[in-house]
Picture 1 (cartoon, rainbow, N blue to C red):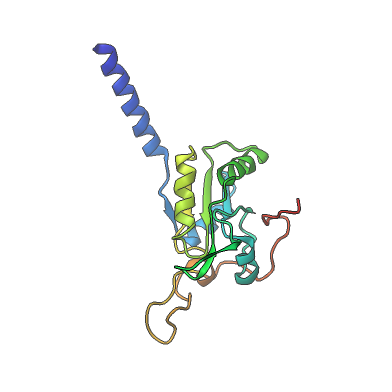
Picture 2 (cartoon, helix red, strand yellow; picture 1 turned 90 degrees about the horizontal axis):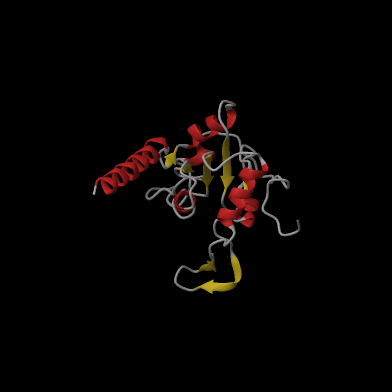
Length: 184
């Protein structure tokens, strides 16, 4: 019985340590950018959008790499959402871990994911990474383009938050060296 209590205490202590060391799941675009500019700790900023989306919406070179969380499948149409299906990238976690290893960084490195709005790919991708053992995975709240206005003359436009609307660096040109590509 004493051994059981010691094991239970040890397990509880380990969980507490993990919880204390793990960072908050969400981070603002400005704070994420600031993290990419500092040199005290390693941070991997990953754009998790499909590269075709980046081609039309824009990209920030502050992102270290583009590894899609969901990949557009143009051979299958989603009639309910009126879009192409976007199944999960089955190699997503392995590709993130490979990128960390390539840089000589371990799985305790802070990994920040960013999608268009933060909700459909950003937050879920950070959660998947945490489930895979990367406890310092986070996502950019409101993503690259921000959330859409709900009312008024600008309803549906993404003009109120996110990376672009925070005045952070971005452009319409893609960086071929950072893009997820099938030709290499």
